[in-house]
Image (tube, rainbow, N blue to C red; front, side):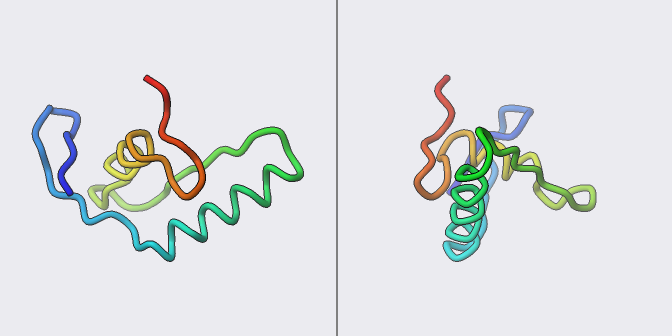
Length: 70
C-alpha cells in the first residue's frame, strides 16, 4: 500500500500486522467499556513510522473503528 507523506509524496507503507490491529481493536473496546473515550499514542525512535502509522489509522481506521471523517 502507498500513502502520502507530509511532503505529498507517495511512499510505501507495510503497516502493522492484522494480529496487531486486532489487539489494538480489543484494547480500545475494553477501554471504551470503562471510559467515554480512548487516546491511542505511538512511541518510538526517530524515523520508524509513527507519523505514517497515524496517517494510516486516520485514512483506514482500525478493527471495528471507522476512519476519521474529513
